[in-house]
Length: 109
Image (cartoon, rainbow, N blue to C red; front, side, top):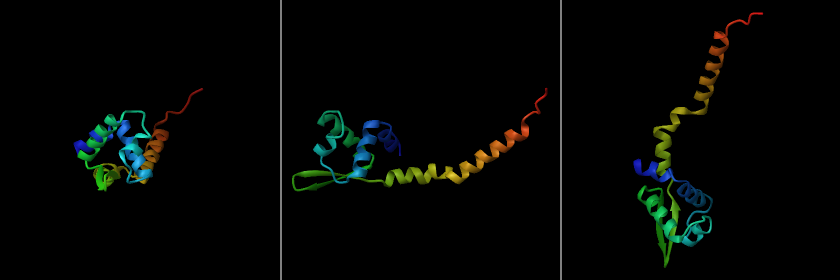
């Protein structure tokens, strides 16, 4: 899980994941078109994403295609984020609002 959080912490890596979400199965060259960095830097980012299992690589002939693997992100959602579903947050916000209204002191004057 730490590798996933480390990988997601960088905006360039998140942009790479976004590009794969839009169009899965891209080559290094295609991914480089969307980033203002060298091929070597993009390669390093992709290696970190692969280590975190956020992407999978499949060779097609001489081309290396990169595919998004959303499973680790789903695991994060299931373990931490799903606890804070929208309806629960809405209920807490409503409770807070009501408590604040109840605790307001009457205005004098």
